[in-house]
Amino acid sequence: MSEGPLYPLRFDPIYQYRLWGGRRLSGLLSVPLPGDGPVGEAWVLSDRTDHQSLVANGPLKGQTLGQVMEQYREQLMGKLASRFRRFPLLLKFLDAQQMLSVQVHPSDAHPELIPAGDTAKTEAWVVIEAAKGSHIYAGLRPETTASNLRQSLDDGTVVDHLLGIDPKAGDAVFIPAGTVHTLGNDVVVFEVQQNSDVTFRLYDWGHIDPKTKEPRPLQVDQAFACINFGASNGGLVAPRVEMAAPVEREGLFDCPAFQLWRVLGQNPFPVGATAEPRVLVGVEGSGQIVHNGTPYAFGRGDIWLLPAETGECAFQPSGEVTLLEIAIP
Ligand SMILES: [Zn+2]
Image (cartoon, rainbow, N blue to C red; front, side):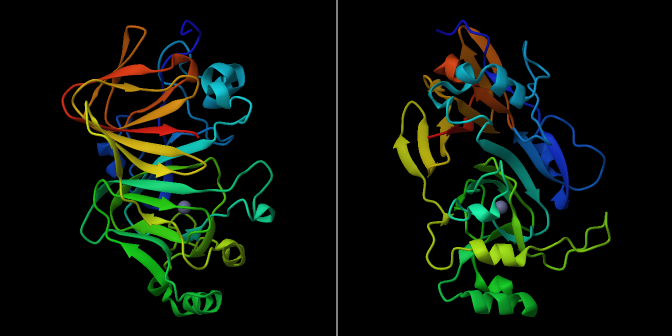
């Protein structure tokens, strides 16, 4: 079945200026960072009209993810082909040198807050690097209400309402839509999220954007309309070990929008799945993906999309490797 036009596809990162960003993505990704200003985000798999990921290898090199979706949707998406016109996930690395805005994304319960063509946004982070003093906040304290949270925006005490995590490399944090969240103070994460750009900023720490000399706009009323007050299923996730040999395979996230596993080891193991696409993300180490006898070199910071029609492939590590595998349920 695997003599079709598709093969394991690698994509180049799209770097984004952010006032809260840094230069640490240069140590993770092989494509050099632009300029010398702060780069906060590398969009590593994006089917957004304004920022399209480009295939970096093979006969389809230079094509956008959107073009591949349009021309080869069946071969790429397999049994998911009829459900999605756009690739449903947006994948990024973030280098949060300073704190991001305190923000929230809407859930499907608030269609009035989601522009036509966009979706709700549940997201999740896997911490790549963290420092002493790095912060992640995910969710509100149980005693927080709409009225005392609104008061805290005026007082500058919003952080007192947030549930904090002292992140360390390898931590997994789940942020369901409706969860107030932020991160920063020198932390690098991999981010998986629904393919949506709908963010409502609640508070921005008094940041002034040096490009515009202005504070960035807030969307406090929209944010309050979609905040999930009360108990949340977000926050730090305990990995579930699903397999110990030939490599360790842990389930980190399992929600209606995405599933994500972490694979650690040095023995060969299978990646990809029949009739559905999978994405691989290189966290540590290197190796090769082997499809139909052809090896594809896989390195740290790499993003590979395994089309449905390539099915299961073999991964051959060169020594100890850590990678993430992502599925669309
Ligand atoms: Zn967010």
